[in-house]
Amino acid sequence: MAIPAGTRSIAKAACLLLGLACFIAINGVAAKPFGARKSLLGGAVFDITKFEAKADGNTDNALPIIRAWKAACGAPGAKVVIPRGNFMAGEIVLAGPCVGQTTVEIQGTLLANPDPSSYSGGSWIMLQRVDNVVVTGGGTINGQGKNVWQYAGGDTPLPVSLVFQTVGNGKLHNLKFVDSMGFHTKVTDSHDVSVQQLTISAPANSPNTDGIHLSSSKNVNIADCVIGTGDDCVSIGHGSINVDIARITCGPGHGISIGSLGKRVDETDLKGVRITNCTLTGTTNGVRIKTYHDSPKMTASDIVFKDIKMIDVKNPIIIDQHYNSSQSLWNRR
Image (cartoon, rainbow, N blue to C red; front, side, top):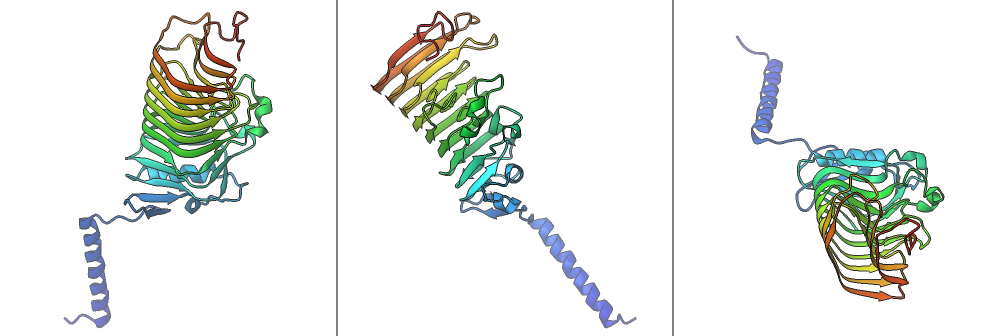
């Protein structure tokens, strides 16, 4: 029986479609993820503007940034790009684990949401439970701290601008931090972390605006940073093991500190901290170790300060075992 011409055309088209479907399945061709383009190195690039982020300085872009991160986290070797422009955002949690190395490239300026109620935790931007992560790009992270410094010293610490928490093999490079609400950067419960080529600035009278704070982390390298704040340029807390700090330019601020140590009962030993080839200018203190008198039993050992240059520093070297008590000669300087 003859097959009508129209039926033959339909059958032929169905066969062609079936053949194409088989070719796709056999050769593993996959659709490109939403919002992605290819980088020169081959990984997918997720620009936050493709996730409806707006560079108007007023729209809260926390959700577009988180969505871009989730897409990149599921793609090997992917990158999140925050392009040039002013992007305001409230609390951001970038959580892992991820498929492979993930990069966050900040080319523009991130502005913290000036409303303190936007933050439920102790951070503005947190990278959490993620390995092989790079945060870089040459851009600026502006905490707009002037809006909230009046609330410093209360029961709840003001948000840290950027936190690495439970991060392994992390890199934080080539960024500018301005006017954090609380600390500018914090690395905690992490290992094998490199922090380099940061420029951190806040007024000399800004409260508790430490430049880089470290605790409960091991194998950390901090180098080639220019830091001037209202508190410690670099502070190294309990549980820090095998830490190298080099070529830090510090001032204004309270200097470079180990501690304070021993404030809480669950603190752990500090060991192997080397601070070398740093320059401090016009700071309240130079290098110091500060511990609480009524601390739990713990040790701070294998500490080296070497090749430290100080210019117009009020208290060059301090070892204070009565920190924050009436017995301290320095009384929280």
